[in-house]
Length: 493
Image (cartoon, rainbow, N blue to C red; front, top):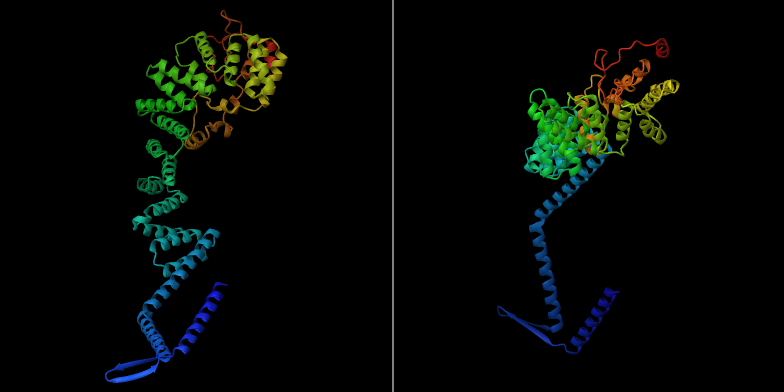
């Protein structure tokens, strides 16, 4: 519409100009080098306009002839760049689709067309990875190390390749270099920490974790739990050669995560060895308040080897009061009641536990002890049979047959860093490997032995569980020496 209006307006102006010149013809005269000419004004104006047009055309032709080589060069460069980007796009699509051969072919074409060596080398490395040519990818990544702009991405690619072939030392080297150059590279922190943990280099991993804390690479609670596991593993590895260093690490682990039972038991044992029983007691109490665990009760009871059985039970009673509503505290309280021969108290605690969930082998065995204490031998045998077929509590397997708490392998500790560090959850490797299944119901022997006679003070010796009480040998003081009656022998059979 606007163009139509402009065209009509131009036509009207041209018509008006023509009419004006027709009514006022006039003449125009020119004189140059003695030559004189007179022409009508309209004709002279038209000639001047035509001359100006021809001059502009000639000038434009000269300009095109002068600039055409550069324009042709720019056109060819632009066309080459477009073809290069087209090849780059195809290479990326092929790499993402897993078509390695097409990715390599298009990457080579993009490398030939584009004057971007960093981009083309990176693309060639990715394409080689997609094609399964790891040696070629490694060569491209090493070439990228020459450019400061691409050193971090080259370290990442080389670290990933080393990790895939199981070379944790090379992975650590590249991750460390990248971690030093790129302060915010989360992958470098994780790769460095993972490779150090995989090698069991606990103190190096601890240094990396501390630097990660300074750079805020992990949430504080997750970082503290990981720190607790790493410190505990490091302390266990140094316990024989550097006991003082091991004790300091174990104590620091309990401060990082008070509820981490392996750290608390290790720290309490090392503190007790250095005669710092009060500190050891505080560590175990803090751990029980945070997350009660049966190994903590065992360690707390045996903290002072010189204590009498009654004093140990008193100590356990104090431990129960730190978290009285927790299931583990209730079970410990029932255990104490059974050891003291208080069947009414034990029954008041155990019966509600039976109604809450399906009873485990541990609870069934405790009920069998309760009925044995009440002279209900038939019920005791029935619950003992049920205990033999009930599920085993995972926590119950965290101590081996020799009484060692948390006898984890190196691989178990490596896994614990992530399970407890990221999920705040303990692992139970012996339970997972079905180790110690025979110890799941340690009270079995109680049904085969004669009932001991009550002792003054209400404590019945020899009735403690294998978890809270160390297994008694036949020559230990306090173990009954009566000869089984025929009736008891028949029941044992």
